[in-house]
Length: 327
Image (cartoon, rainbow, N blue to C red):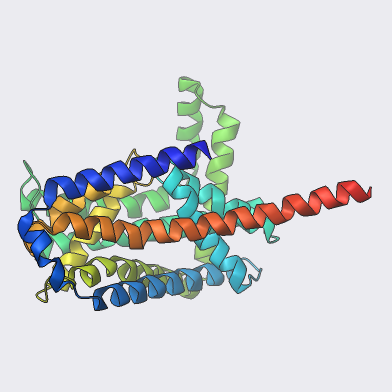
């Protein structure tokens, strides 16, 4: 409860500051031109993103030899949003997914690789898209030329491919053993155990490459639909929306958010949104759209996830209490 209240206060302050420093009189005057259809489009984009996310989750679970009901799929997806919003770098989302899968009969050793693949495929899709973004989009980042951005993104793709191969080799196990022994921060056995778990998760991909390709495509479709929430909300104030450019920038923004140090990327997300999308919107409206985007894409799933997680573990707690009373 304390963490939730602090998080709510932080979200309120960030939203208020974002609107205060970006809204002007012209923006307030333009509110009468608000197009309510944009909220409908944003809702459709959110639902489509959740649909493809659930589809890839069911496919991964079936690849591991298990089945999930629709309610279980929704609990895993929204539980991820709930815990991700409460933890820095969205780290709690993965833990929540594994625990919820365990509640529905998937052992942790099976659930952890599934969650790992979901996260890896999402990040991999964003990384693969980076060279295309910097090749065709005029995104500028201070002190870094466009050519350097393109070369860096290509290099990042190659590094990811090489790492996916290297972690399966004996050389990587020896290196990890040597580093953990020298640093002393973790025991060699624990590090090698985590590496083995990672390789087991990736082994699920290699065993069924066609199904894995479908999971990757569904990951991309889910992310594109979720990123379409932003242009849908922009429709409220302007009909001139270069959707490809906006989606490109949403991909860059969300890749950065994976490494944001604040809970749920709060503050970082709003600041980047204002910086990247101010040129596409009427003066003074970018802050309103930034807060609305966060509300639809993050806060609505967060509250649904909170209800899903609390009811799930509440039911288990009541069942355990009833059993104890009978005994």
